[in-house]
Image (tube, rainbow, N blue to C red; front, side, top):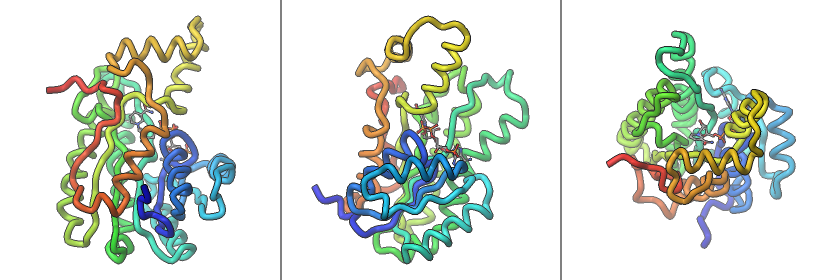
Length: 263
Ligand code: NDP
């Protein structure tokens, strides 16, 4: 199916790895142009340049928590491609911590990353998205937003805030013709989980990655019995960006292999 994104321009944050890189790859395969952001420009450029269609990608160094950097990135991207039709607010990480263990700075940083990491980008891009006839935003979030976990207490709360704000963004930006939706992820096999496995292995853990991630899937009650792949997340993201999803806004799609246990 033609997702009607050929020739359109999309900004993807956190594009050097995992979900952001897979989304960039999918968009390039659809014929879109991609403004690709992440903090480490060398890693970002190497990752993006290896993708088919890389000549339609512009890698730019950008910390999404720094409003001035975000504004510069959006302006440079628009100057380069002449338009901006979509955003994927994906940059981020999870803070493994209980509320008791987290410092005040940890808590502030987590809310800064989850809330401003999306809002800085949306605010900077809003005029250009409004000028597009197909303006759309996808916020990459987590099922934790509705289903907190003790080990991820602070990040769960910050994600709940972003999920709630996504509905408000959809309501406020509808007047500009901009759709705003979320994808809420379960456990996706990316750099985040590889780093946690390395910590486990470094602490003397004896399982290999396949066994460790299979046990994780069982422990978390994932219906499909495995972690998801970044490509399996990229598909719903790009589908929500597509003009074919023109009547979908203010909603979220769970991509968790059935991990959702809430009523
Ligand atoms: P990865 O660790 O593979 O990639 C994270 C990306 O975000 C990298 O490109 C990283 O590059 C970038 N990034 C991190 N912090 C910032 C920042 N402040 N400004 C700009 N870029 C930043 O993560 P995933 O692909 O797994 O995660 C993608 C999103 O999905 C994240 O928001 C994550 O929280 C969320 N998620 C992931 C889950 C999973 O199981 N994988 C589960 C639930 C949610 P650099 O460090 O160079 O900036």
